[in-house]
Length: 386
Ligand SMILES: Cc1cc2nc3c(=O)[nH]c(=O)nc-3n(C[C@H](O)[C@H](O)[C@H](O)COP(=O)(O)OP(=O)(O)OC[C@H]3O[C@@H](n4cnc5c(N)ncnc54)[C@H](O)[C@@H]3O)c2cc1C
Image (cartoon, rainbow, N blue to C red; front, side, top):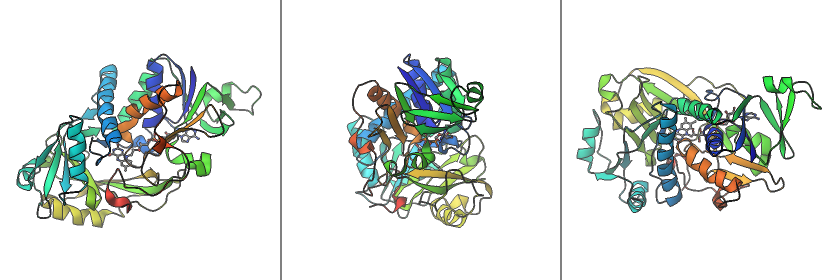
C-alpha cells in the first residue's frame, strides 16, 4: 500500500513508523521538523500511565504503547521512556483512582493502594490531610516526547519512509504540498513549488490544525496551556521522585527529570489559542500552581521558578481521540484529538489505525467524526466535565 501521512507528531510519526516497518510505502509530511515546539508533541516530557478510570480500552492501549515505546528504544538505542512511577492522589474512596485500580488489576497491570503515610515516603514532602489513599503505578513514568517523535520519524525513514517538509492542503483524496524542497523540484502541472501527493490512503494527523482543515467534521477546541518548572534542588530529582496526578484538583507534574526542574501544571482548559499564533510567554497560572504546591508539597513552597512554557491542547468534547475515515472521501482518514492525554498512546493507536487502513478491525465508534456530547475527561477533571 502507498500511504501519505500529513503530520509528524506522535500520532502521524507513530503511524509512519508502524506502517514502514510493516513494509508499506510511506510518505510523511510536516510543515516543521519533527519535534518542533509549535506542535503539541513538541514538549520535553509527557506522562505515560495506564490509569484511565474504569475505561478498559485506554488502559490496555497505554499498556500496549509502553511495550511499543520499548521496541522503539531498542531500535534506536536511546532511552526515551523513564519509569519514574506515578502517584494518584485520591480525595475520595469512589473516584477515578478506585476505578483505575480495578481496571488495571483486571488487566494484570501493576498498581498499589498506599495509605497516605506510606505515600508520603515517596516525596521529600507531601501534604496528605485531604487524601483517602494514593494509587501508585510503579511502571508508569515519562516519555521524552520531543526526542521520541524525532526517533519515530527517523526510524520510519530507516524502514524506507520518505520525509517531506512542507505545508499540505486537502484536494479531494490527495494533498497539495507547498513550501518544501521536494515540492519545489516537482512543479509538473501544479503551481511553482507545489506537489500533489496521492496514495491508497491519506491520513491527516494534524493535531490542533485539523479543525481548520476539516471544519465541523473535527470540532476541536484549541487552548493555551502552561507547564511550569521549579528549582527544588537535588532532593526532587526523578527518577527517585515519582510523577503525580491530582485528578480532582486538575494538577499534575513530575520530579526534576533531566535537570529541567520540578514540573507542575494546572490542567484546567486555558483560553483559546489559534494553531498558527505564536506561543505566548508563560506565567498566567503561576499563582494558582504555587498555591497548590504549598499545600501538596510544602517543601516546594517558595521554590524559584526555573522556566515556564506555553503549548496547545486540541480537545475533543469528550476527550476521546479521533480516528476515522472521511465520510465522503474514500481514501482520506483523519487522526487526532489527543485531548491532553494522547502522547503516550501514539504507537498503540497507530497499530489500530494501520490495521483499519489495511482492511482489518474497524476503528472504535467513539473515535468517529462530527459533534460529540461533553464527556468525562481522560486527563483530569479540570475540563469541567462531569
Ligand atoms: C502541556 C501539555 C501536556 C500534555 N501532557 C501529556 C501527558 O502527560 N501525557 C500524554 O500522553 N499526553 C499529553 N499531552 C497531549 C499530547 O501531547 C497530545 O495529545 C499529542 O502530542 C498530540 O499529537 P498529534 O500528533 O495529534 O499532534 P501534533 O503533535 O500537534 O502533531 C501534528 C503535526 O501536524 C503538522 N501539521 C499540521 N497541519 C499541517 C499541514 N497542513 N501540513 C503539514 N503539516 C501539518 C504539525 O506541524 C505537527 O507537527 C499534553 C499536551 C500538552 C500541550
